[in-house]
Image 1 (cartoon, rainbow, N blue to C red):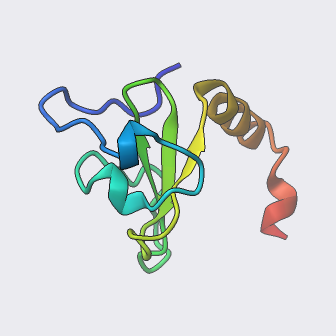
Image 2: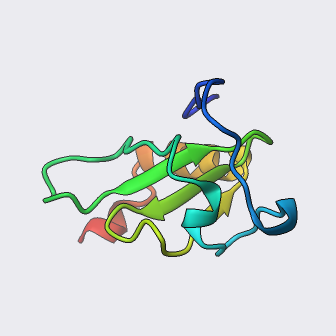
Length: 94
């Protein structure tokens, strides 16, 4: 399941010494290619996600684009989304 597709015309994300890791500064992944797939009527407090070339997914807080990026495998993101759709994360809303 492909969640977010980055157009091929966008530059590849760059990181220190080519290493992309969990918690790295999101700015090191560049400013192009981020999407707000979960935005809504929440006053702009959204998550932004980027599909990396190796299939992993980077997630950052839209109000802190220079803050840390969380890096997930495609399998991890699939499990999260499928679990959320099944109601397994509803406890986070109450």
